[in-house]
Image (tube, rainbow, N blue to C red; front, top):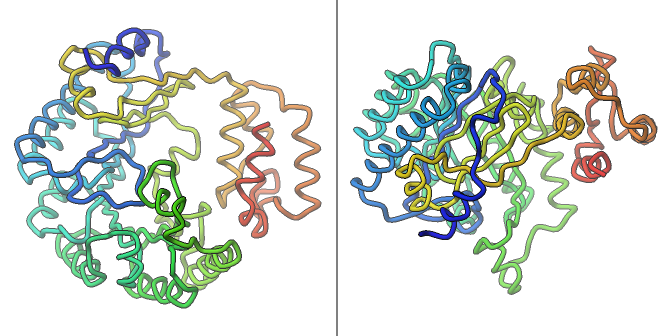
Length: 406
């Protein structure tokens, strides 16, 4: 027996123990990539045949069906308002395999309330017929991993597309009647200058999408990029340059009418990514596919991060979940408060404590008072009972989160 699967059988999720809850969001992880970018720590695999991808779709639909069979009290409440297909590169699924997946999931779960359905698309592989098929199935939002519009930055990240591919992809998306479009960007890339980053931001704005996500490059453990860093073969952006890039991002996008609604996410009015907000607002979400993480009524779990062992679990009619963690109400409150501070809408401390039926920890008030004095958090100007990070606080967000995690 495969080792992870053996562990799963002795420590598996007991779906009957989960309380019934409304499941507002659905995530589907499609791990296929034609190339593994050396900064990425998401579970992905390369060099897969169409036959393997079709078999993968069979298992995804079987996993969805397992929820109906093994946890009908949960499945009956799976009526997502948002759906997100991430990866990997979901658009690498063959046309007929994706068609089968979209049709099959709709036949398993209630999609009558879906109002946002996002799929990640690689700019190098966009095809008009494929996009028409996605749109016909109800997908209404696409996210393109542009990362940068400077070819040198793309080479540093080992991205195998050209900046012109992003233009072409957006044109095709609009031809296929997509109006909700996101561009992902990365800053603090080794060798990237502030001028280069500003040029990428200007380039992205010229494409007139309604949403832009801009993340600082992170060196995740065990990625090839981190190995290069350890070996001294690359020089990371220094802290002051990264901070300047963050400030430039917020100022540039704010002036363009795309203020940040979360530290790294910017949108035109009423164009926020509702699926991401579901995570940050502590809603319930179910995730399918290898390595995909779920949260249901205070219980978190993650699927096996190995496609073969994930497939074996499903073939054995076992929900492929491991790392099961049941959060207390106090832990859920802490987590919700920390995420809420990151949002421009802020978080109401007392209402949140009431929602989770917990007492506000004794040290919270003193910490909040100190952070208000330091002007690292602030009261929301339109909602005085809500707290959020200030501009200065955003620059040290991780340190503030650590204060409330103790």
